[in-house]
Length: 570
Image (cartoon, one colour):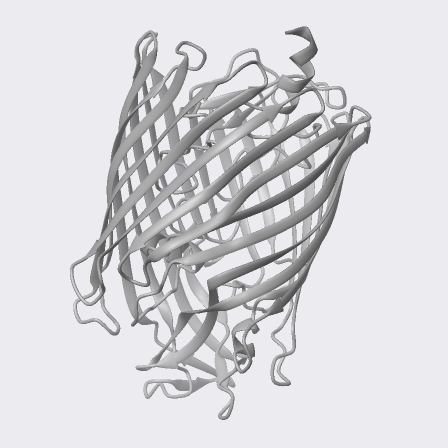
């Protein structure tokens, strides 16, 4: 097996089922430290079953600009759970601790509370729990004026809007390991309360105050989602055939209806699993399946989506090749058979360079959780179709030519039918975020680089370019789609235990019908001090330039805001 040692380092295993409460990162050649990072106690998608049937391909290690500890706050996350950005900190300890608590507060009632604990009940029994609460409530300056002919909105920053958005999350997972299989059961719950933007132009209750228009908060909304799941999986390398199976059921309800009186609820019964086996030391075959049955209590049509992913893979010292096909069949709501490729070729040369060619596709279920992740302020009167990507061709190069230095260069072209687009619109006395669909093609390219020197400093930048194309007469859908995006991040050690961070983002938009949305232009800086290996205090200044713009989810952001807090590992 010695000759395959390098291959094993480059090509990761088939599937990872369990979440660890804390992960220990080995010392590397550029950062001589041992760190413990907070676990994602909830998966990034509410579905807990995360299966990547095709073996993951791990390119040469590229130093990360920061290690996420969820110790500071980024603007709000959405359903499903997306943990907020975090500052880095240095921790020197031998064992990962099981508990984590974070408390922070800022202006506009910005609040972020979180607690999590992994309890090893026995050597075979583990209980993983998490709870969090975050959000804000305060005034921001933003309103929309809508072009009478095109309907394209423009922001009017002389209008004040009192906004609130709070989210609560909780999750629990229990697992028991037998000799060759593992059983687990768990669940998630989340609630989201917020207010839509008022139609300032038409609000009868608006009043003048110091040249600004103040309006009451409009359309208080409540979303709630819950999920339960149970599954079984084989323990890696204990059986000749690896397998996994999970059954789950989740609901998503909108409490207050805008177009549908009394609101609407969506339920989903989901079955997911995979089977795979080694042909020899370098070859593997397998298949995964995913069946989602979606039901509504009113208005919308019930439907089912079945996904099959057969694959064959070959891994050698220099080549990782995966050949598969996506076979998707949907019943009702624009149903039918949809096929797409899943072919990936990665070639490693000169020890630290990886040239890759990927030709893939996908079918994306646009259930309520997916729409809410796209924009937490979505309001829909019609049912959306499943998004289908028949092809996504990508060519790229990743490399780490020097210790501490890594870069990536890539380009590609993708077509998606029923792609999602966000567009604010005013109706019924309020402004909502309408999610529209259209066939879209996009040519994209990107470049990124990171450099880290011991624990003294690390920095990086990335740039992305997008050239969108939609059917004639539908250019308005691209109003807040990015044309290009630039990111810069840096972290420096001022003295022992004290670090300073900075992050800058600029995102340009395309001029549509002579109107151009304001660019995303955000600078965040922060600092933190680690008192010991358990307690860390932090401060972050967000949107330091106090810029006004609307993100891709269709709603304006807060102006300058400050967050301060403390985190504790135990």
